Length: 341
Image (tube, rainbow, N blue to C red; front, side, top):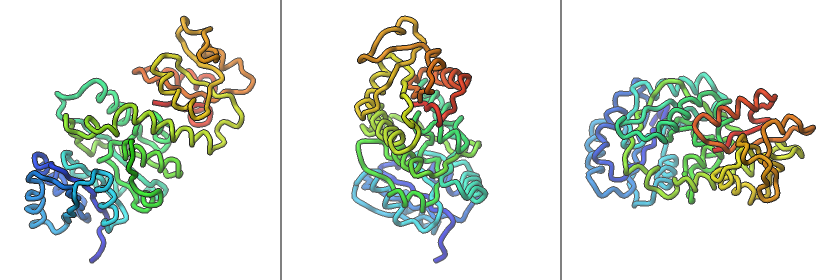
């Protein structure tokens, strides 16, 4: 058999209520050279019957059965069974824009140095959107270029998982998906970044991302804030340790609030203690945290050796304000400072 250009990998477990909508959106793709690998991860509802009915009328649909083993196992099974050089991720409760595959294939063909391309997404239903998800969606939809994503990789996951298409070889080269007490998609993006893989996003909205109380990001303990924080600190420590980014420069943390300290303590525990804490709150300036002084932003300009700054402040708008302040001082993102979620 001639291998298709794209393998769509979609794990399914008990998704009967949304499968028809999802499969309809896939069937309407303007790019038709694909196979759909559906990994049925031990469904106990009518998912299998729905899939079988669709497969009878579309030979591009391949159903893979496995006992309930979890999403990481299902994803790796799909990767192992796929025949195409390009993998498009999809979830069984989401909608594809009709030009999604065409535009992402076109982007990767035109940018051979890029290993992964995602898209902007639309979260639905609109009535269910909470402020936190609105802000995350605004932020991740604004991260488009290779540079944007590289500079923001330690803030949050820059991609909605089912919106990505990647070159199979680059993901297999870093070991595929990993199982652990962490979100499997963010872990993969961090490993790809660590391996030097360029990642980008097309500016079009190509995925309808369904919000529901059952979504794994809401229910799975691997997707808690604490799980993200620990994973981020692990990769940030590797980034600081393995690269030449510090070069004996003092390390400074921006943000002396309680939540900031909680997150930055995960890095301190890995032997990355700050020389100072920067804060704009005049009530904190002059204090000491674990013996380390809290200083005003102007302190940075007075140092003969330019410190490397990790900005841990996540309040809406504050992250951008800090970046602008550092840029005015001559700091370059990635070289002199990083934004951390």
